[in-house]
Length: 458
Ligand code: ARG
Image (tube, rainbow, N blue to C red):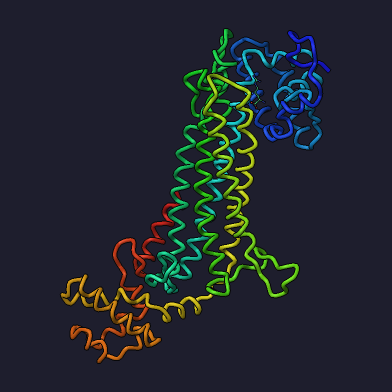
């Protein structure tokens, strides 16, 4: 077998070196995009009278045949032909004869591979935005069912103030909303055609880059041919946006795992998303949440890998850039899988509302209510803080909670206390009354959910 670029060579590399340099084992994932790009390129060549209509028809038919075979897994690729581009070109020539060799007129693998990557990411980023919105919808539905479910809010993982469980869930809605916005914004840069940039300098053929871009559904073209073939920013941006999604999912996973523990008992995962132990019969492990938390590592790794690959490459194309692919494919698979699992996990989990609410009556998370109470009666907040701090200490020493103190004990601490304090420190009321904009008050949470729904419709 001779190389498609073998003309100036006198020796063939050993097979293992071919294999080391080849990308076909992974860039075969771009088969559809590569054929799509070629179809647009050949149509453009004919429109610009660089190829005849007949040549175009033969090549188009050949490419369509390859597309069909690709669908039914009938194409056989070889490391001998290095990558998806040369493999397909070889298969095309086998299919339709030497006219197939005209396809590569006015094109290089450098603009070809960049085009494939743009097409691939455009498709997958659109899918990922859909999956993010699906998860946001699941969160809204869960939140709607739990507006008045009161549970402990934490800072420093210490009980802080009671909050609505819906409010906690909706915090993740807004993180994901920023993710949706970031991916949507990034589409502007993904949705550009590098095709026609050639190897780096453009071409002497009278091509029409806008025409092929339009056929491929791109909304614009790269302005500079050297930038077009060496830019991988759009992939780094994708990996960075994906890393941030994984950060959000991972934080959420950490909470789901804690909440599933014997110590919290706030939720229980559906059996589908949990596993047992090979030795301990009682175990129900929140495996999927742990795994997604773990997979965050590989997505970060993929981002750092490509940042590092790109930093030392001079313009324009360098073989280093072939290293852009596996991390991108892996991130797409990881992200799409994690988001799909996550939606199912949240949708099906059991929320143990009684345990949540019980937890808020066995802690001091209502202490701020007392301080606010005194402050609203005119005591400077700093003094009120001190008074309540002392009451908390008294309770801790006696093994009781604030609601167990008598009115006399309260009045000894400050005569501003009256009988209504017991209502004020009730956790349900504490949440209900936090009605500042964006706060956890039930009315605010309902409003926020309505707002969130508007975003989903966009
Ligand atoms: N397999 C190569 C890559 O993924 C395609 C481009 C090769 N271009 C070249 N001039 N060797 O980057």
